[in-house]
Image (cartoon, rainbow, N blue to C red; front, side, top):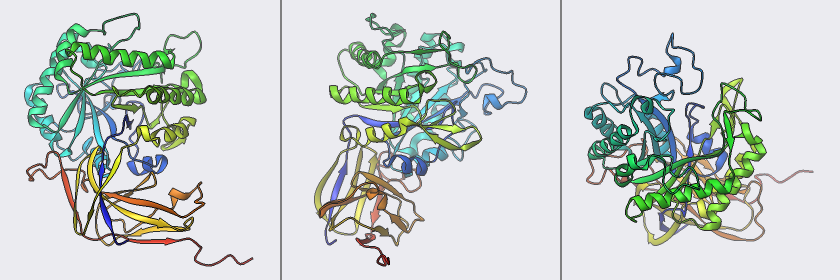
Length: 479
């Protein structure tokens, strides 16, 4: 281990993003998700609400004492997401900022989905921008599914008012937080026989002013959960073909492009899944495999990212179902293995390019999950390892990659065991590979005192870890 090289972390052809927590499930720690899936995502999507003009806020509305019992999921005075505790009169000590810091420590960006009362003042929006400044590149999805009729902001304002609010929020928040990329999520093309998008006249200006275009699409969905059971002949669920959903997404992008005078912008699917309540657990896995297969088969270079909704769900929209006897435990579904395979395919994995030879100490840069500079350490393996460990003497915060599998080293960690890379596989010949190390923000936030601190975090690596590789047990077998 006498040489190290620079490594550039860059974009995937289509990024894999993941939802973590919503009205249907609690947030799951990034350590657990990484252990189950073996790699970080480009971004983790969080869902929160901000209705500071309501007397009940900042309580979660379903937990307010004396609140009327809901007849369906959105039958509350405001959306039943976890409350955004920043803004005017708030602070960044609690949620969603605690989760945002953990996400960024683990080498991922944040997608913050935030439903906002469209009648809040400019000062409220400015305060949100100030809250988000330290979090590097951040995707902000304001009032998503804005052409629907279920969220509180749609019940309080006309579609034109919601669209105008989006533009106002974009201008003010980005003025205070230039690191934020705004995501417009509307229905898009909802019928293949239609040329226009739903409410496109009202949202035409928002299409032009946002940074990113987005739609949410479900191959199947039981929107009546948890208030009824999806049975054949019922009216609280639906199923669409995988092919039609893919075509609707593509047609939506083409219409966005038309409304923006042919000038392209990034297009993402901010929520995608197939509901096991409708198709069953095996059917969910098959639908999702076919959907991601279609993206790769078409080489859909117009699509920059897809968010699977979500990791753990109380119903059947998760890679895990929340255990009804223990909310902190998840029950893996068949879609987990399918999804794990998908996100490890080269098409959905970030690219890494080796550069020049370096010498210690080396200054590592973290711009985002698609723009970072780390190091590569050449590794030669004579045979299948029995032990492969890293020993650290510093308080670095690192993401470590070996042969496609990623590991997290927290500032307190002194030993990282890389043997899971080899479980279930066998080296049949000597192999040369590379150990790659990146340094995302140790505290989850950037240092805004630096000239480029809004966009970059830096860490100086003074010393490499000691690497212990053994290809035989410590003691031989004694038969």
